[in-house]
Image (cartoon, rainbow, N blue to C red; front, side, top):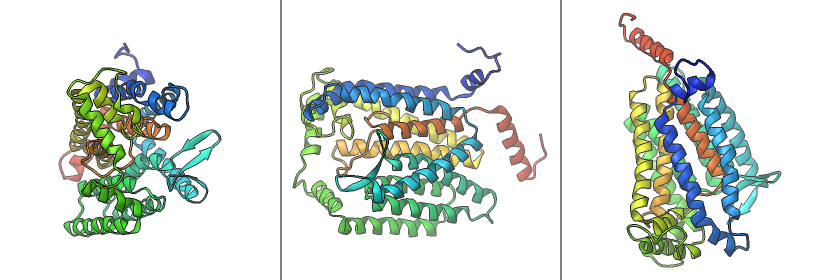
Length: 384
C-alpha cells in the first residue's frame, strides 16, 4: 500500500486516480482474458493453428495495452489534449494510406502492415477524435468567437468520409452517435439537431442503396432470409447455455461460430457461463458508462466534461452494438466487445480510451480550486 504522506509521482497517482474506474477496467480486461481460453482454441484449431495460439497473442497484446492505459493515466488534461492531437493526425494519415496501400480483408481496406504488426488505424482514431472534438466544443463554449463547433463539424466530415471509403459503416455509425451526443451536450441548437438528424437518416438510406453488403445485412435482419449462419449459431449458443451455462470448456455450439473470439465472444460467454453471467457483464458496462456521465455532470471544466462523457459513450455504444448483434437485436456487424474481444488494435485502442478517462477523472484539488475561482469571477461573484 502506498502511504498518503509520500509525495512521489506513484504515490500522487495512486491517491488521485479514480480507483473505481481503474478496478472496472482491470476487471473487464481479466474477464476478456478468461473468455479467450473459452472462445479462441476452437477457432485456432479450425484454421490449422495450435489450440492456444490466440490466447498467447491475447496475453501478448495485453502488455502494451495495459502499459498504455497506466502511462496515459499519469497525464494532465493538457498532455491528454496534445497526445490526442498527435494520435489523431497519425491515425488519419494511416487511414488515408490504408485506402491505397492497405491490406484488403473481406472487401475493406482498414489495415496497415508495419513490420510484423497489422494495425487498424481507425481504432486509434476514435479516442483521439473524441478528445479533440471535446477540446473544440469547449473552446467555443469558452470563447464563442472561436469557431470550435465549425471545426468539429469539418473534422467529423473528414473522419466520416475516410470511414465510408474503407468502407466501415459500423464505425461510421459509432463515431456519428458519439460525436452527436457530445455536440448535444455542448449546446447544439435544435435547428442543427434537425438538420444533422436528417443527414444521418439520409446517409443510412444512401448506404443501403450504395453498398450491397449493407443492404444484404439489413434485409437478412428484417426478413430472416438468406445466410444467417453466424447470428443463428450465436443465438443457439446463448440458448444452449441457459441461465447458468454448461461450464468452462464444455461449450459445443461455440466450436462452429466463425468469429467466436472476436465479434461473438458474448455468445460464447453465454453458453459456458450462462445468461446470468452475461447480465452481470452488461451491468458492469452500464455502471462504467453511468459513472462516467455522472462525473461529467459534476465537472466544471468544459473540456473534461465533454471528453469524459464522449469517451464513456464510445465504450457504451460499442458494447450495445456488439451485444445487440449477438442477441439479434441489430443487423450483423463486425464490432468487438471493448476490453473483452481478441484483437491487438482494438484492445490497445480501448486501453488508450481508458487511460484518457483515468487521466481526466483524477482528483486534482488545486485544479478544482482554480475552476471554482474562475467560475465565481465569470459570474461576477467575489473571490473566495
